[in-house]
Length: 102
Image (cartoon, rainbow, N blue to C red):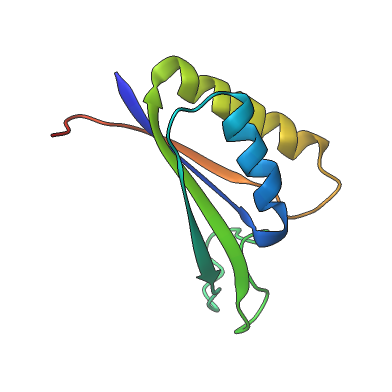
């Protein structure tokens, strides 16, 4: 089954994410620049997401459609990077099933 992998990170870490996707030999992936904002709603702990006030943060989103095995590898690598980072700005990764495509 195919999976959609999405990885978000701050702009300063985009080369690190680019390297991860290349080293894991993801055949095709895309990158989108994002300007993220945080509102006053504190119902969910989003302390390491985007700006701390009405100012924006510049981030990147990498995404790819990959096999389940490759998706699991990517998630493990991203988890390892977050554990080893000295920064409070961790990567955020999501793995979703692709039910159908044309």
